[in-house]
Length: 295
Image (cartoon, rainbow, N blue to C red; front, side, top):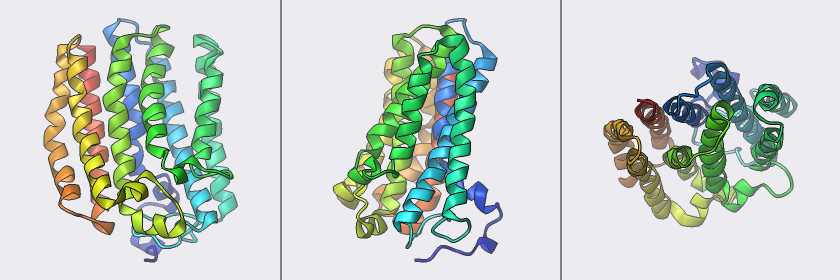
């Protein structure tokens, strides 16, 4: 299926290429990590803002890098999802690559400031994050094509982003922020799972063996439900030390509709609004979790 022409979209192609539905994956760990810093009475708001810049810029960078790499490989030639810049002919591969590198540069600049005040070893962590972002679909052996994308998303948009945000403010590691990173990571994985569920036919034809392709539609649907609902269940261990974290369970009402849609067999374009609903679920649940931890 060919992508719709740009005239159908209200937003600029570059804004769409940044994949706004996926951006909660970068903001939620910053909110939750800052919530743990507040709980310890050691929040530093300008550092939290810089951590947000790092996370958001990395997310935009990986989205542009994915657009570029999949576009030049031909993976996105026949899409049923939102517009892609390279595959849709809306931007040249070189310009999309430059946009990805610019976003990574912004993340690096903000990260350098944080490293200067919180520890220079954080530069190594940042470098690994950028390399992982590029290697997801770029390079000779992209790990996203081998079914490892979900594991990477859990690590980098769950554990690393949440714990890292807390650390640059508190200067210490704690069990609380590690526990809080688990639901954050599962929500981020659920975004990728539903995205890859939608793309199974095209990815399989292009030789992109994502975890969804390997599991098949039925297994991927079960995985999505497990991640979305499991993320809410993982709030319970956090609540053992921060009872107000249970506020996040109010987001269950937002989980029911997308989970039901996925389990009932929605496919192709029908999953585009499910991706948006999953992003909203993540943002609301993550915000409530951050507030609950901070209280």
